[in-house]
Amino acid sequence: MPQSTPSTRGDETRNLLLDAGFRLFSKFGYDSVSTRQLAKESGANIAAIAYHFGGKRELYRAVLHQIVEDTEPVFGPAINAINRGTRAANGDPILLAKVVKGFATNLVRIMLNEEFLCDRAPLLMREFTLPSEDFDILFEGRLRPVHQALSGLVAAVLNKTPDDPECIIRAHTIMGQAVVFEMARVVLFRRLDWDGYNDERSAQVAGIVARSITNSLGLPDPDVDQREENSHDQR
Image 1 (tube, rainbow, N blue to C red):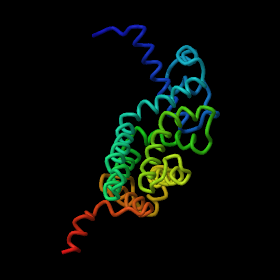
Image 2 (image 1 turned 135 degrees about the horizontal axis):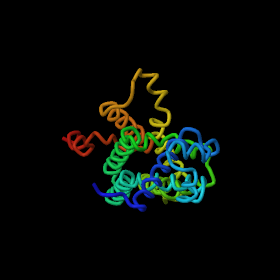
Image 3 (image 1 turned 135 degrees about the vertical axis):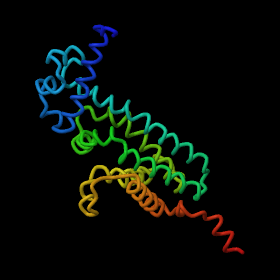
Image 4 (image 1 turned 90 degrees about the vertical axis):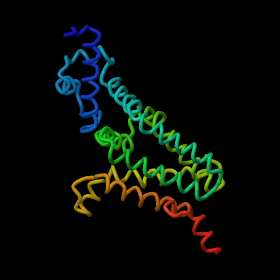
């Protein structure tokens, strides 16, 4: 069997500390987690925190950076799809409605079915409600790109500029309509007597979210081909 080297052992210890940070910071928040707890949870020596990160604060920052990096494979394509679709639609309300549907489907899938993100939702929620001095890591790395893409989509619908306050507020509303199904899932589960999300339930949520967003923007139902309907009416 290959022998582990000091380098691979060091990487393993660093990853163990990151994983421990994810779990403890998510559950208790930054201020309530001690370096002793981090060391015990990770199985590493307490001195390893300073060695690999410089201290608890730097470990917390590394956790936030890791969230940005690890969610890029799911959020990156979703953001690109919004931007490409908005440009390609060129103001066509039917095509813009399809972009909305694609966004809603993608974000709901990410929020509800991506185990990685669900596990880290409590930490994100803490940063949303009680932002730390390191909030900008999440804002610049993950939240701003999503928000800007949605602002651009809304601007295309309303024929405004993406930095118009109305477009930014509407973009925030759109994000909230999807995020609430993860952040407040327990409320929905109680109301519907669900034991969790599955593919069928997630698809149902995505469809309702998409229709809610298109209705709020005055766009046609993305599941109805309006051109065929108009052609049929004219006949």
